[in-house]
Length: 265
Image: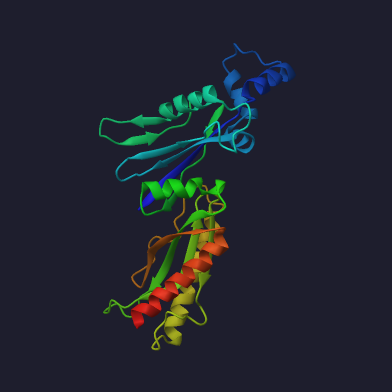
């Protein structure tokens, strides 16, 4: 299942910074362009970079369930000024950005309070809504949860036989993707895996990695793992708990290889 994760940030110094801008640039608060003038200096990127992450929202686009985790005042990440009143303000803003529609769907909309900013949604797979929330919260622990999946190759379309040719681990918190491809020795490939098939795999993986690189600078979302063609498919693997993405990838490879050998036996 694919989930959308949003992070809500709050800039505690917003009012003071606005006052400084008014003094510095002699802005008129009654001018119709006042809000735009302030927004030019204090935009979403500025708030996200300099503010405090106060909430995480996980949206299931299929069922339209939403799980929300608020920053608690007793959290080690919470600064001294963040108390019960501030958390109540965050809760009120969260309620405003979740909009329910007549068709029983829910949308996440931009914050109304200019001191808040919402990140663009990150789409990632997880077993369920709870697991997706745990993944996004994992960066406050020694270990974190990571999504894992693989690209499988089907040599013969008349057969159901397929095997992994690349394994990926995704960190939804940092939007980080690490991978291991098997363009040389492949421990999952059958003995009949020949040079021609190997070249097909290499070309496809080159296309995928090129699409991943281009997606980093694309203005619109790019899915490198969509429309892979009849001989390739992306398959989700169990999420893994690890100390970092590389550790998660190593664990995923070890578990996948152990499972593969067990099935072969």
